[in-house]
Image (tube, rainbow, N blue to C red; front, side, top):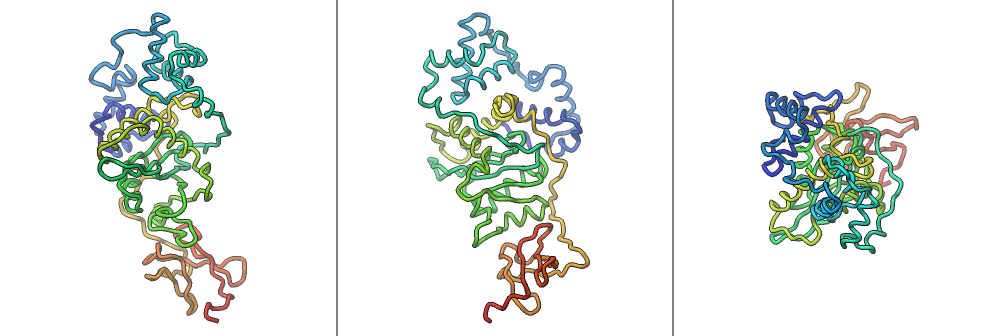
Length: 379
């Protein structure tokens, strides 16, 4: 991933955090981030000696110490809240501590300051209630992916594509897309896979371009993921809580970036997304992570992205058939439909424990089942 012009320091910080993780392969990270080992080890030395200040050419320390007096402490809270209007008292408290400030007020005191100074809407605060959380045990076990609702630009519309790691809440991708086509998603995912590696599984919505509806159970996008060895699953229809972390991420994105803002075009929107994603991953304390940052919990995947898709190989006992243009295969002089998304690709047939029933397997996933005992459609 080349360094972004608008957030070089944030990318350096992300890199060194991942490079210092247990069992991290620094050379592999250098390749994925397009940085030389000499430069990488230079930033690692500076970070270990000076912390985040060692990653920038100019000091990021404030020119004054606002927390020396009670009035200064209050102003520090208000300044941070004005910079991030959607952050609550606990998040502000954790961030001030992370910045190394002394005498940080408690979350309840911060809440009182915000209420006294008109920074909290009482009607809005009652909407936020704790709820039961579940997360996968390690990074890259599951990535959640979805499009946030599109919105108008001065020129065209933006379709935000979001990809979130379930364990760490690390925002792997936040892309301002011109459409919601499968080819667009595959292009953005290829960029993420090159940098962060492959996840074990991805969960996504139903319908185009994801698949898993009655008419199109698979799409070219999900077939591509299966060939990469990425398992796929889909949220239950009308149950957005299946992708609850990504849905919550969308709410935060709306509150902190999109609300009451208009962007002229996709480039301006992407620039805002890039800057905010750095804040979200590297600075913003996350309540579900005990107020740690997502970057502190994330580790890159050890599964590299292959630039050339691996060949499909099946066992010697498998009955292999190539899917025809109409998405069908021929077995014992009968035609069986498996889906147009598999056109031109081989699938394997394997007998099940039920006499006459065969599983149709693509890569490692069973995509259909046929029963040779059933009468033909035209019988």
